[in-house]
Every structure is written in structure tokens, then in C-alpha cells.
Image 1 (cartoon, rainbow, N blue to C red):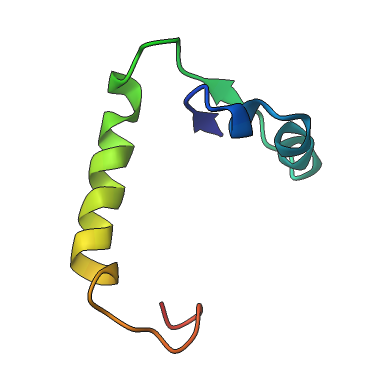
Image 2: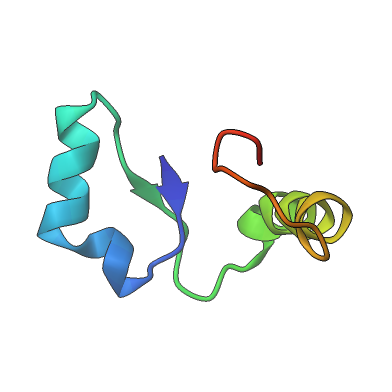
Amino acid sequence: MHSDQGVQYASHQYRRILKLHGFVGSMSKKGCCWDDAVAESFFGSLKKERVHWRNYRTRYAA
């Protein structure tokens, strides 16, 4: 599971949950914004096209 160096991703609780589910955590280098650019672009487009301005009755429907 790759993330930036946000404090929430470095917490013991988050890392414990990753380990519990068989994931290995990795983080980008400090000040390196480019390796998250593709994911940020994808989720930005997804929100604009499928989430904003829509109401979903359930989480499953969303």
C-alpha cells in the first residue's frame, strides 16, 4: 500500500491494520509529489464524473 508521508499513514494503528490484512506499506520520499500524481488525477476525475452532484441511496449503490 503506497502513500505519502502523512501522519495518518505512519501511525501504529494504520500499519497494524495493513499487516493484519497482509499488506506491506511503502511511502514516497519527502517532497516527492510526482509518484502520487497518477492516482491523484484518477481519483480527481472519478469524483468529478461520478460522485459530485449525485446522490446515492447506499454505499453499495455508489
